[in-house]
Amino acid sequence: MSYTKRQFCEAIFDELGLSSYAFDMPTEQYQKTMRRLDAMMAEWNARGIRLGYPIPSSPEGGDLDAETEVPDSAWTAIITNGAIRIAPSFGKQVMPETKVTAKQSYNTLLSLAAMPAEQQFPSTLPAGAGNKPWNYDRAFVAPPSDGITTGPDGELEFS
Image 1: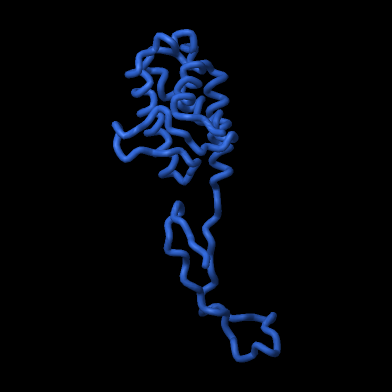
Image 2 (image 1 turned 60 degrees about the vertical axis):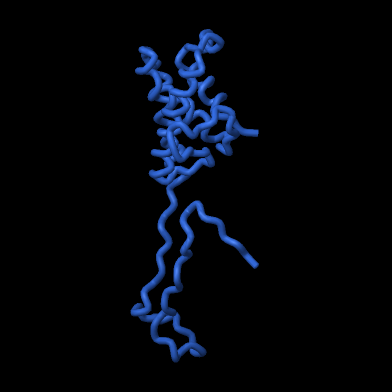
């Protein structure tokens, strides 16, 4: 079971030392925090860090009780980086430990998201010395195949 957007907002408030005020926190503050969180996650999504966080199509389209599919390895990064982004709107200073944790956890997400682009050899590349006798008719490597035409979040159907 993963966090809901409301639980992420509460964890961000807790990181900022506002947890004792969470019961007094008006719904507008939760909505404002959720919009900033949605914006941060949309930015991460554009950078290639896709975590299963539901990004609304408009700022007003978010649901605080929406279930996210964020893996537990990313929770700390979202909470600490969210706290850094939300702190100025509450007039709070972020603790240095939070900044260090945010940087380290974000770097961990970047390393997990780093995937080298697949490359294919061009059809003009000679087959070389490893060309076996049963393949003498192919002096060059096979031409590249067409890549997958779906986007990184697209679904593939196998039949």
